[in-house]
Image (cartoon, rainbow, N blue to C red; front, top):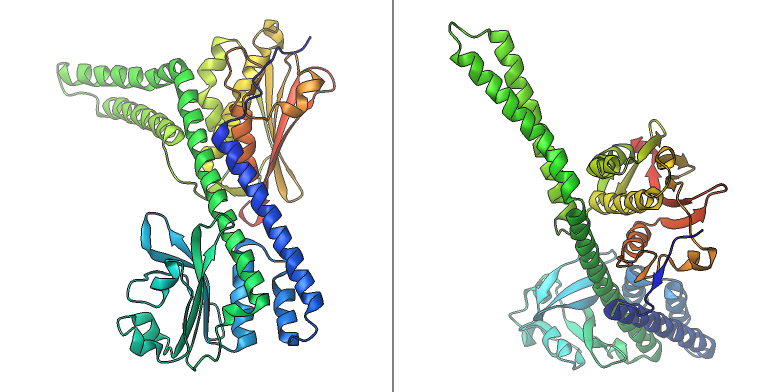
Length: 447
């Protein structure tokens, strides 16, 4: 017997479009890399230094490529400042540096207003070249003064679709005989830089979109857990009421109240209030919309807290859960709320998988182990398992084995784990049920 499944093959349009765009840009980068290699092979008459520039950037991608490119240009052409910028969304007159070579070293990244600068024409899409006296031409540009600039050349970075995404600029304290961006090999690198920058922006859009989906999923999960959460919160609130009533009774009694007993009652009320506050904080953190954060996370503690969130749900269906947590696990650097979201998804799926078992066989195991440099988390159930024919598809968006499911939980969970440099997968158990595993990189210096 296997779990029923309901397949909706229609992918989520925006997510798929962004994924396809990233694939297209990766192909564009590879094509430019091929052009670069061919240019190297055909550049027998060019200086060997240009060959060095190609070799220095050929295996670099993203931020590493930007840094390698500006460094090589500065060193090969012996200029003092080289920078690559990106346009800022909704601020057409502002740019942010992605890589800045500043007099023999990398400089700090910064944002600046291009008005009254030679860059102003460049971000409008027009290459600019000032062989000398650039500070006299742009007296209001304080950056040129600080750089002791004499010459400038800049060129826009334009995508294959014709969109401005940033610019490349060279600034020196000597006159510049020719604009560096006119050299053929430099132009290939500039096309590569534009493709890398476009890919960076599309990947950022994809990350924001996935974060939005994760937030919606957390809110949906919270709604489904509402009854259990109300039960969990009701316990400390009822205790506070009982402790407070007892304290009032002591104070109204004839004669002075027994001080030690009164302190004990009030401490009980205080402890219950703290417990209720912690429950609310956990819930607000779980459902809150926030940017991704790097926290130092104790997975054992997080596992126990997550089980606490669904304890009432487990108890209502007579499901038992065994925690098998390796002592003194290394800590991990991760977004605490996102990892808790993954644990919640896997544990609730396991609870549903065993819900129709005999009462003595409704069992889940949550195991956490360190394996070399990684921490492996396993959620094992004794449910009916999955049909092998759909095992490779359960992490696809909108694929669900539930009649009322959205098909988003496992897809979002895998995205979260992969964004943390880990892996999420599922395997059938040798006897019965399924095991879902994910890994995160541990830090033994923090164990």
